[in-house]
Every structure is written in structure tokens, then in C-alpha cells.
Amino acid sequence: MQKGVTVWFTGLSGAGKTTISRLVETKLIESGIRVEAFDGDVVRRNLTADLGFSKEDRQKNIERVAFVAKLLTRNDVIVLASFISPYRQMRDYCRQEIGSFIEVFVKCSLAECIRRDVKGLYKKALNGEIPGFTGISDPFEEPDNPDIALDTEIEEPVESAAKIIEYLKQHRYITLERP
Ligand SMILES: Nc1ncnc2c1ncn2[C@@H]1O[C@H](COP(=O)(O)OP(=O)(O)O)[C@@H](O)[C@H]1O
Ligand SMILES: [Mg+2]
Image (cartoon, rainbow, N blue to C red):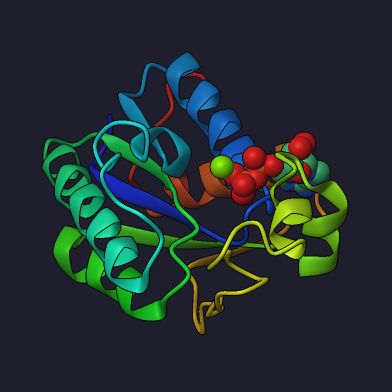
């Protein structure tokens, strides 16, 4: 049993959005739940390959993603969307558009994201090689009132993923046959 919802992971690059959403995805698939995972990096290579990182392009990127997420959500798919989505306005837009929406703040300090530097992008951004890089030369507006807040400097990825699953169960978005 499942009821459509978009679980929207927002946070700095390297905060843990992709890592945690993959764990959630695996757990849901194992439980026979229909799920679609959407990742900024992947979407930007196809659906929005024509867009850059200006505020306008970031907004367009999110609008297209919201459109697809909405279609899936209304067909009762659990959508896991991992996008930096640095502006509050964009995230509010998604909530409005999609309706059934859970905002997850994947919290991690900039210092820790720079230390992790999973893709080597912070090094480049700090060298001035990537203009408009979130956290370095572009803002990240923290969610004021997220539905779920994860702190990836304190929790293990599996703990964060378990919190999401628990939330989905408690709010009756999913019922697991095998808990
Ligand atoms: N508690 C945690 N939750 C998520 N990721 C963590 C955590 N602790 C360390 N990490 C590491 O941080 C990195 C996060 O990268 P990623 O998931 O790609 O971030 P994002 O998708 O937000 O850019 C990974 O290398 C992951 O192993
Ligand atoms: Mg990612």
C-alpha cells in the first residue's frame, strides 16, 4: 500500500542527499513499494541539460523537475528528489505545485562539506573556477520549518534513512508488508 508523495531532499553539495535517498530507495524497493529517485546530477545531464546555474536557470530546472514529480506523485509513486534547491521560493513552489510534499533538510555545515568534497567541486569553487557555486559564491537559504531535519554530521546515513521511512509509515504514505 502506498500513497503518492514527493520527498524533497535539500541541502548543500556533499551534505548527503544522494547517499540517504539511495538507502531509502533500496529499502522501499525491497518492501515492494513503487519509487522513483530523481537526482540533480542526473537530471542536469538530460531533462535540463540546456540549463546553467543562474538563479533563473535554477528556477527552470526545479520547475521541470516539479512537473515530472507531480505526475508521478499523483499516480501514487513515492518520489525521492535530491536537489540542492538553495532558494526557499523554489521549494515553496514545489510544495504548492506537487501538493503531497515532504521537505527534508539534509543539514551539514559548509566546513564539513568542504572537508568531504566528494566530487572535488569545492576545491574548484574555492579557486574561483566555478562561479555561482552554492555555499561559496551563491547563497543557500536554510529551510525555516522543514518537515524532517537530518544532521549528517551527527547521524549515520542509515539512521537518517530510517527516519524518512519512519515518517512515511507514521503519516500513512506507505504500509510495509515486511517491516
Ligand atoms: N551521515 C551521513 N549521511 C550522508 N552522507 C554522509 C554521512 N556521513 C558521511 N557522508 C558522506 O558524505 C558524502 C555525501 O555525498 P552525497 O550523498 O553525494 O551528497 P549530495 O547528494 O548532498 O551532494 C558521501 O561521501 C557520504 O558517504
Ligand atoms: Mg547528490
